[in-house]
Amino acid sequence: MDGLVLSHPEQLDRLRRACPEAVDVSVFAGDPCFDRMLAARPYRDRFRRALGVRRGQRLVVLNSTWNPEGFFGNGGDQDLLPGLLPRLTAELPADDYRLAAVLHPNIWYGHGPGQVRAWLDRALRSGLTLIDPAHAWRQALLAADAVVGDFGAVSYYASALGLPVLMAAGGQDRLDPETPLAAFVRNAPLLDPYGPLRPQVERLITEHRSAADPGEFVTSAPGASAALLRQHFYALMDLPEPAGPALLEPLPLPPYDPPRRTVPLRVLTRVTGTGIVVERATEHPYDADGDVHLAVHEETRDPGCLELADVIVRDESANDPRLGGPDVWTAEALARHEHCTVATYVSGPDTCTVRSREHGLLQLSAHPGADADPAAFASALYAWLADGGSIPREGTITLQVHVAGGTHPVVVLRRGDPSEGP
Image 1 (cartoon, rainbow, N blue to C red):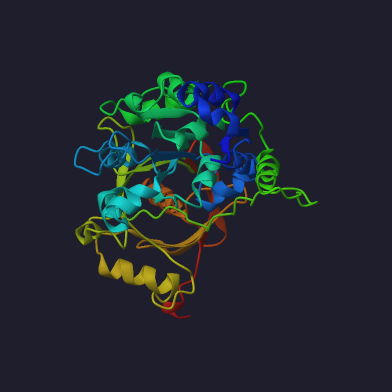
Image 2: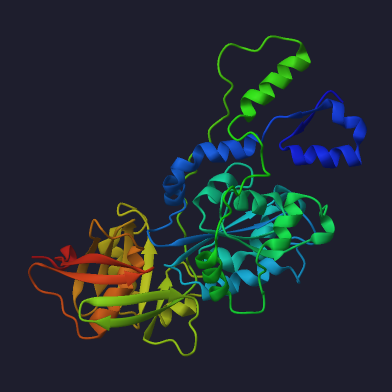
């Protein structure tokens, strides 16, 4: 062995006890993985927007290492993560929370992408995003508000970034009890998989207090790994170092990947004047306060739900030739589904076209200060109309949609329908 790279002096003490003959070839060279995350921290908002995280939303990243005792485990029927995900998507309101999962590359390799996606199918249809485990997991951590994971490195990196981490699988028997990772696992709050999940996530976030130096034991040379590693490599080759600075590849901006929810959503609403509180979820507590209607994506797995839907949703480009555009699609949707009252075509991140049986064709546009899913705006409009609201023949009306702890002004404009002629 020509060299053994260590990231922190505490590792040298353990190395000396476990393998003293390796001490002489050890070298401190920091942690390039962590350094890349530190350098990309200023771009947190970009990473959040890439995942479609809206203002006021909390991004919860779930992660599992490759181990039978990990969060994902061995892929069997008793695995914790696949069983918890449908409950998480039911208990965490869609507009308040965004869910993403980072699974160790060996989980994908060991079980196959098709099997992994089959196990997580309902959660994926509920808006879960699976993060590329090789190229995008660091960006997901930088974007996260909280992490639910196990004893793998991703959870430890999350803690080192100052994030609150809820431990779903401890795996203490798998860890050297003297390591900082083992100490982190012992001290992290534990998930109760049988208790209500939403209070646990909210308590994790609100009660979290980061250490003064959360990444203390990840690296003793933050930001310096590229220079230290290059120095070591060129010394091994007995060559002079290049004159320029040693640099790490920056973390790339991931592709835009907003949530896509095709499971039916039960929408809880409360109307006061032009203010509408909206909470969308696959389920609501039995004692929830408010009126409930059913919003269903046209590509739902269960077409029977479309016959019960109060609001039917589609999200595509306004110029999509397959659907004929928002005006044509909304007319077809209402003609095809007699129970439906409102058909909604979402054509952008802040706008949608709505056709109401009673009020005709409408355009909903978010005010510059708004930032929520236009499908939630359409449900707010449905609830407001059902409560007796009316759209003026001329001019606009502004609704105040309350989701994710914020208020989002939405302008409603009555449009002429080209299909009706002059």
